[in-house]
Image (cartoon, one colour):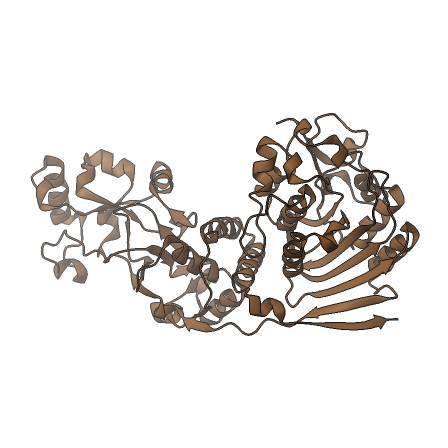
Length: 507
């Protein structure tokens, strides 16, 4: 995709003195990772480097393929659309400083336009066609910021007056704990004949956002305001708009939504659970076995389908449960394996086996919607079943929704279980065993309370992405993503109107 699909007139270059003040205003932390999503001539990168940020801690992206003079000062990636890049880099950086392209979406073409129209606002809706390219860049950049991080952007005055911009402002406000808006009344760029806005947003994932606004006449005062913000001060003449804290969410017990039970009790895992090599060695037909999960480490993603199960199988995991039906009892390999079991290969005298008739027919759980670990070094999370016939042994819990649930409703519960408040409650219910293992009985899990929110179509995407973060060891980021989704899912018109303005000048 050529950068020529974006009008060249959409690019304006940032004065170095403004770039320096914006980088300072981000309040960079030691060892943090920075991002310039549209690096251009490298104005921000040069100031990051000047302020002591090493190249290995700066990511720079630009759709223009030609090498820039300052590309060496960052980890620079050229020839790629930032909106495409951002999809793979959620919660990847600590600070973003940017001057996005200004162009009506009607002037952006082909795949670049398609990606821009896929960018989501906090209410789950897509960016409208009447919006501007800068809005898509800004919203995508927000998703790249980690919990507690910051974002600084210079934007056109349309931030204040464009109809579509009100939802963009709301999305940014809901994503950060504090947002400064510095409005400069005079033009700062030769190609822009109106004033601009510099937004400085802190504390990604913070709640009850405080919005502060200061209006200044020229670039000199703009830079002075940014320097005060960099020092942790509130610029003189700032007005504050403080949002009401959101009302407490209604909560409900987990066992009101789902049944949590143990997986299939084989009575002798060494006999009944096999890996692919063992199945092949005994030449057992697949019709004599059921695909199964038998370890917490088998929960490798938010959903388990054929692809994920086959990956476990190919890794040598014990994902076959011997459970022959009447139709295959006369198969020679099945007869040989049953004989092996009766002659010492299986503890047929064990309670759960001895009480079964026939002894080799393990009782399976009823309808399964998902799986959860009852003992692991990680707090429980929900894995949805996508593979017909997949079951689990009693080392895992199986989940069944008590009422019919859509895919979005199932995914919603998975997201709720990843929120910081629910993770904290799970930790309080945990029984800690040797080696840091966390043990939960079904009753412990059932007593955990989750927020009551409406499901949205993006629940599955958020669940997949947040669970991937969790499994990669980035639990705080996973919870921040889940928290943000819950916050946006509870937005109503009534909530939006509950805002009061504190129009007191701050000395």
